[in-house]
Amino acid sequence: MSENINPNPSILPSPSATPASRPLTGPLAPPPPLEGWRIDLLKTFPWLKWLVKRRWFQFAVVLPNLFLFLVFLAAGVWGTPVGNRNILIVFVWIFWWFLLISAMVPFLSRAWCTMCPFPFFGEWIQRGSLTTPKMAAPGAKGAKVGINRYFGWNLRWPKALSNIWMQNIGFLGLCTFSAFYLTRPIVTVWVLGSLIIIATVLHVVFRQRAFCNYVCPVSGFLSLYSMSSMAEVRSRDAEVCLKCHDKSCLVGSERGWGCPWFNFPSKMERNNYCGMCMECIKSCPHDNMTVRLRPFATDTKLKGYDEAWKAFIMLSLALAYSVIYLGPWGFFKDLANFTESGRGLSAFLGYALCLWALPMVVIPTVFSAFHWVARRLAGAEPKPWKESFLLMAYQLVPLGLLAWIAFSLPLIFINGSYILVTMSDPFGWGWDLFHTAHTAWSPILPQWMPAIQVGILAIGLILTLKSVFKQAGKIYTDNRARLRFALPMALLMTLIVSLFIRLYVS
Ligand code: SF4
Ligand code: SF4
Ligand code: SF4
Image 1 (tube, helix red, strand yellow):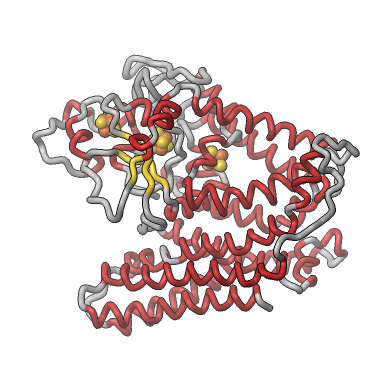
Image 2: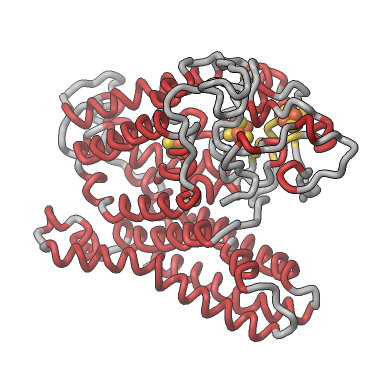
């Protein structure tokens, strides 16, 4: 997991023990210089700075979401069991998913986590407050994390589980049963209801956002794809942080909670584990944390095999879902939804086995084979296997994000009219709140969809190929070796995109 994550804030050296005159190494060292342009959004838009600095900011964005979430759950329990007539299915699995993957993640990073209702109750119990930070003397009971005061057990999350393998397994598990909750509102209620209960319990038992960092199945792909996002929370000036004795962004203050996501915000280099809660922007006494705009796909470093496998899982699922839900092969949909199609449990188990084997074994094996050939071809003094493997696995991040956008577009363009219908009649009870309950099913631009999908994939491929050749330069300084290494990897990326194109234009 990211090295900017501080798994144990209480054992960090005291800021006063590291005077600015002494060169810093390890967790307090400054981040490396920036690549590419940046626009400081809080300087450009003073109203935005004013807004995110309000103590009530996060509460104000979570509350309406929580209300909607509860209405959706009620619709799942008491509304019509017909999936495309129930607001829970249509808004969560079509509208929310499309917004999340096509707009929020690429442009706003993990802004969804700013407004997510899952951790609301747990965090409320843990903090004993909805908005104002509680303070305690260091070392006092209840002050196990920094100088903010927390309630609950405050246990440290087990080191062996401090990675995203649980999220990988959880997400794959959820996706195996996707046909059940995509079509049955009550199953979606069980899934979302369980997540909110688990989140609450884990907030009471463990410190801060352990659930979000290590358990939430949505978090895994948010963390991976937020690397490509055009927004970031970062410190403005590393020098200011070096001279800072408070380190309030880490330990908290009366202005803001210490980073709930276990980051050391001043040193953060990647978006992966920043939930954009804006606490560090409030807590920093030197106004040194901000939100910036940056080029697409700026964070380029995967830190472990857990993250690489997340990239394999996401790519595999985009491929599998394109076959199951968009392709003309009803056979696969029948396997996924075996209780309705009458295919039988053994057929479903075979389907589940294939769905797991693809990202866990098949794609990693193919990827490793290409990577092995690339290293052999390059010849000259290779870096360690893991280093070049992770650098190349990163290439699947922007590519995977654009593949998911290409997959998700038809969801909204073809099924968008269900949003208007369920807005007016959320429970399927015959209401017509906004006079749109009888909107006829009318797909938008269906004849253009394959061309748009191919266009998105082509952009993904161009960006990826550029990145493959650039990143290869970090492994081989010799130009000839670099080219020989990059060519097989570029071929693999091209084959992957060709496969998607074949599926969308078949
Ligand atoms: S990590 Fe999951 S539970 Fe936590 S805020 Fe993000 S989406 Fe919500
Ligand atoms: S971000 Fe602010 S609080 Fe954190 S180390 Fe830098 S100056 Fe100090
Ligand atoms: S405190 Fe700052 S670094 Fe930590 S999650 Fe919130 S916004 Fe991100």
